[in-house]
Length: 287
Ligand SMILES: Nc1ncnc2c1ncn2[C@@H]1O[C@H](COP(=O)(O)OP(=O)(O)OP(=O)(O)O)[C@@H](O)[C@H]1O
Image (cartoon, helix red, strand yellow):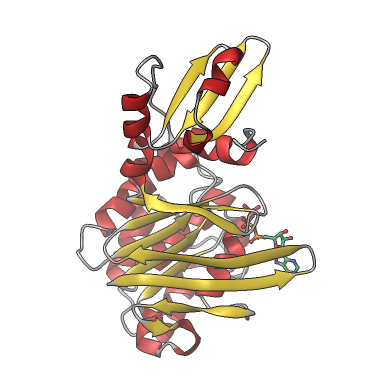
């Protein structure tokens, strides 16, 4: 069962197009959604939440069209956007009362436990909260109505490394329940590398890959070699190349087969961040 499924979703703005994107988020997993500024992450998340009209394609949440989700299903989705959308004059006490009226499954005790954990003041107005405090409050809300699906847009940005680590641990705790799923976008690839099971990479409005994280890392590798060696490599293995007068770095895919075919090259381990950088900035094999 997939928690989220997108099929050929398109959305055109004047200077940007989300171009027939398709991917699925398996239920019970954490999917990291990565891509450069302006790649289309927030647009995709808004489309999933039916906050914007899409031009074509379909989006399903637990098999139901995102366009007409029941109130019950909506209540099982916790959402955190980059930047607080809570009214600046509210206090935490006010928010608790509002959430009781919005969510029939609002867990007040859980909410106050998170507030204590995050050291958030109960009487201050939101306008006096720092950016990090607002993010923590939004996360506490998303986690306090017994959601089964968390959709987070840059939820850890603006937080210091210690708090980020604490929040990543909370996400890992959340995912312990078999039917819980997290879809999170982040610029902080190290966070994604740490907790995600799957990674979807969006580049200029298109999905470049959507794969199991470990398989992705194991199926890639980097070669560092003199420039004149590069033409010896079959282009079909090359994801991207960085070259200067001292030599070349080549990102290789299908690492297992490559290693058997080219025993003379030594392949170094790589990371999601490097794979992304090579795809978006390294010269492609066809250049
Ligand atoms: N309502 C809108 N009208 C016109 N263009 C828009 C609108 N919303 C987003 N865009 C454009 O769509 C593109 C993708 O924006 P989006 O916010 O989805 O990117 P992102 O990957 O989330 O970026 P970031 O990491 O910087 O938040 C951008 O070029 C943006 O200017």
